[in-house]
Length: 426
Length: 163
Ligand SMILES: Cc1cc2nc3c(=O)[nH]c(=O)nc-3n(C[C@H](O)[C@H](O)[C@H](O)COP(=O)(O)O)c2cc1C
Ligand code: SF4
Ligand code: FES
Image 1: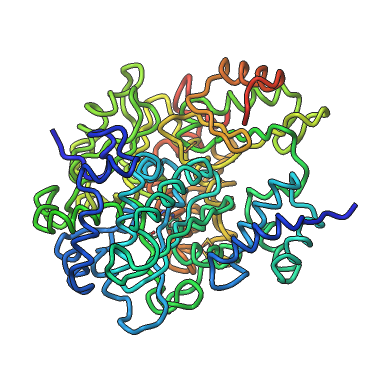
Image 2: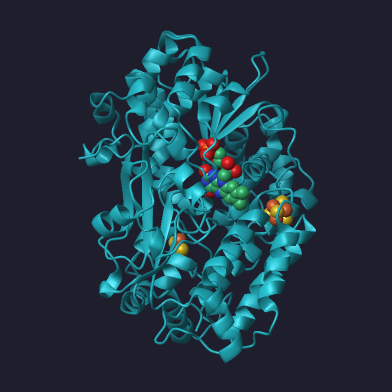
């Protein structure tokens, strides 16, 4: 049986209550950290090989070490925007095991010298935020938050901030803009948030799942974390499986578990005994894979090697009755809808791609449309302020690369290759 | 009559401001507060938010129009938002949306004449493992089917469910 690092509610369903959390070793990591030098805490996280669960897999300890060591006001921000289609994991950490996120925030704040933390949670999750706030209040009462935490002399305040419906606010600089009270239009980097972040001060932004890994790393030591998962891809991962499976849901498993095991053992296999056709392995922006990839190890490096990415670990499964053109028309529409509009290639290119794919799907595709789509991709990639434009390209180009024949069939025959297809639009 | 915040409201808004080093940061939370109180973000609501925070009206308006959760038009008592993004679509959200549209006699973005229901199509709600998901006001309803939404609408009409 695998170990639960994050989903401790599967060990004790009441772990959201403070006394239950402490019975499982909760806040021991914080006690230990507060007796260490802040740089030693950063070192321990570095040694654990913890990599960001928000999408890019950036080494967390290294990110923390970029924070300047002067006495400016610094901020530690948690990204709970959870907007990437297919992703539904952070919400369960927040609702089922909230104290582990709070503890991770305080430890991170201490390590980086940040005395204020914000959790940016998407506005639609207000019902989760309201419950989470109760855990924050409890942590204040117990002296894990606020002034002079556990007599250490370290102060840390934690606030929740609700978004208001915009995928782009999950991008860290868009998030910072939104937290400051602006529209969520991303900023050019450099300067990086560690230099100029929220309110002009040094800031680190990490994903919920990343931060929630920290308490146990400190309590049990980096060496323990290294025993889980493949080299340089350590720890457990919360995989979310949605789409055409019998038992969709979230599963915490060792990083590097095979796609086959996740889909067939944990998510119950494919609906109605049908065949798998396409699998998006890491949220909608991760290039789509096919059934030939079922034995891939679901970790950062293996997916990169296969030309895709682990992203948020959100696995979207489509079976044989799915029309790929239609499915990706819907995703193209998503990116067009969410483009913040400040860069021309993304603002103009994403709706253009969506229109072309919709036309192909409707039987109005023309010779040359596929080349045109590739051309638009080339004109977006690497030419925008933030990676949303690139994300749209990874998504669409991935589908064109792997399912080109289906797009061609649509253009030539003015109809769908799939009979009795799932109605995504039609 | 022009909208206004009460003394108590202004106290709550001051408490929000205390979470940040800069009053501007209270723009989003104060707009949420105003929407809850006034039902939607009219030009007048934008003005009172701007005044309460001491910010330019243009700033607050810009923010209110950027984010999809702020309703710039009045919405019905029940604001039904159907996720039609990929995971929900794979499991039939299109049919659910169509069914609601027919049943209520309104298209996306419209409100029924009795002001009871507004229907909208939305992007991923972060609830893909329990797809199809719809949101009504602040509540999520998961694992939806045509039959289930049908019953849901009936219960809402009779005032049997709180959202
Ligand atoms: C368009 C876009 C949307 C994003 N959405 C999220 C999100 O919802 N949650 C998240 O944690 N990271 C999201 N990210 C990644 C963040 O920019 C950032 O890399 C991440 O929060 C860093 O945390 P980590 O180092 O712990 O992974 C998004 C990135 C882009 C480009
Ligand atoms: S790439 Fe798109 S979303 Fe990102 S800043 Fe440019 S226009 Fe906005
Ligand atoms: S796709 Fe509908 S909730 Fe995510």
